[in-house]
Amino acid sequence: MRIALMQPYFFPYVGYFQLINSVDEFVIFDNAQYIKKSWITRNRILNEHKESSFINVPIIKAPRETKIKDILINKNINWQEKLFNQLFYYKQAPYFNYVLDFLNGSLPNNNYDNLSEINALLLRKTCELLNIRTKITILSKKFPTIEYANTADEWGIKVSKALNASTYINAIGGKDFYDKEKYRDNGLDIHFIKPNLSPYKQFKKHFIPGLSIIDIMMFNSIEVIQKMFADFEEI
Image 1: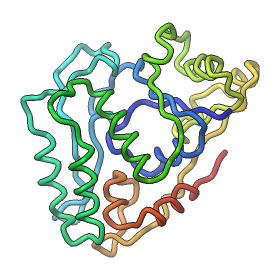
Image 2 (image 1 turned 60 degrees about the vertical axis):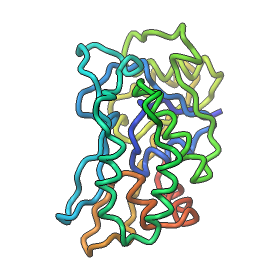
Image 3 (image 1 turned 90 degrees about the vertical axis):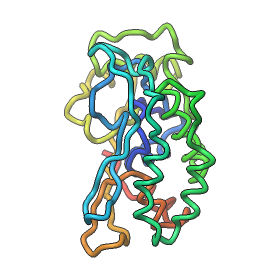
């Protein structure tokens, strides 16, 4: 069994979905400490100035040590409306109406006040749309007794053992952070997903890689996006 553990990102880039698609179970790491101005609350799309800008979910300020699972949305700000206004730049994109219909049916209403739950909801709905069948679970809910790790790279070991997994997969950014010998000593293989981020046609000639999955969906069919999910190296 192959698993991955990752913080719940907001409409992440294609590499995040490649990671989800490459495992049997994807565990949302909501017990991690919240990091200000991270991909947990924001991502990037194109704008009218021929560059990228951020879309985001506003949150209520919290102490530095607050865990992701305890971060609350600032419901006094209509972030959904702002997001749709920012997406209007894509009105000439081939899948603009399709994506807006998807977002209209997926974005939560003000009954949701928890950031982690909102991101988990959006990840599940996006995966469903893109035919990713991986099981997605939330760490604090599935394994409430796993509350700490001696070192940051031991979370993957704890969750892998709890799920009887044989292989742990991580994003390429953690390649030099994880102690591979520690994983092997615990009977686990560990591999890393390195996305290729191959260009696709955007509005302008200069391609901007690594944007939100929303940008990819605006310009590509589901069939093409599914091919993108296989465009990576496993190291």
